[in-house]
Amino acid sequence: MSAAAIAPATTTSGAGVSTPRRRSVAWLGLLPFAGYVLLFLAVPAVLAVGSGFFTRAGAFTLANLAAFADPNIQKAFLASIGISALTAVAGAVIGAVVCFALLGTRSDGFLRTAVDSASSVLAQFGGVMLAFAFIATIGQQGLITKWLISSGLADNVFLNFNNQGPLLYQISGLNIVYLYFQVPLMVLTFMPAMEGLKSTWAEASATLGGTRLTYWTRIGMPILAPAFFGSLILLFANSFSSYATAAALLSQGGIIPLAIKQQSSSETVVGVANVSGVLALGMVVVMIVLMTAYAALQRRASRWQR
Image (cartoon, rainbow, N blue to C red; front, top):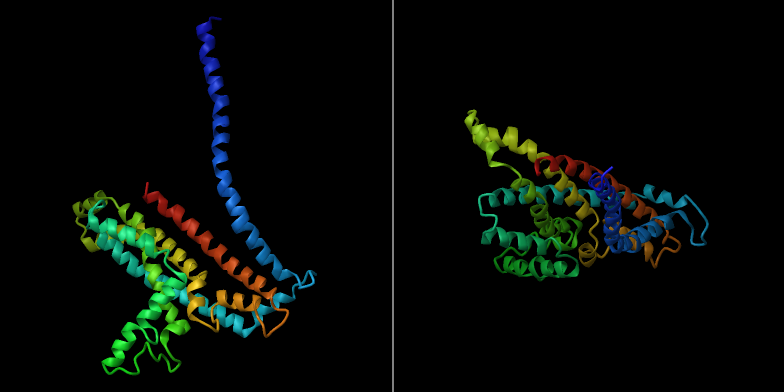
């Protein structure tokens, strides 16, 4: 056999051996991220949830699960779910309208760039800073509240809501605050799906005699539905897990993240710290269900974004 005939086989064999090596080296780049996930996400989550199945003395117990039968805990879960659902639906609808309006602008134009940049910043704006911004705006001494008082509305909704004091310091007031970051998050997550709509689909519909309404009801909306509901689930999860902003506004809890904080740092009831681990388990279960549904919808939506 000639050397020319042997050379291709050697080259092919060499390529086949080197490819796995290159891939194994590429996987090394994930080690820092894997370490971060392990140390700052996985380990704290396991410790937090696992603590709910042990007593303060370290003995295994299932007694802490009785916390789910507590009416106050059930009320906190329902409040969290209610706020998350309301702000997710409202944020998704408003954000989708904004995305629809942006379709008529240039992708590299000033307006699209400004909205994308603002959404990236505002979607991450929360905690004490966001709480203070709303306190200064619609709080008891807020700018809008004082203006309404000076206009003769001394008993306006921001100063006295449902005869329980200022709206901002009630659970209902969180709906307004949460929308501040829910709408930008919807714009960020849903805009790529809107941009994935091809103009040829609308042209084909028009060629076949379809109206603009027909295009959106029979083509556009069905294609966008997985992405829309996936973003809706993401908004729900984002609101359900929010803590810092609510903690800065509510002093008596009322939602499940604040209930966990109260259980772990209670000064009036001794021996309930481990109950917070059980409540964290309840939140983890809800988040797993949401993220599973979100992943399924994202896989379906990705078919139209290729």
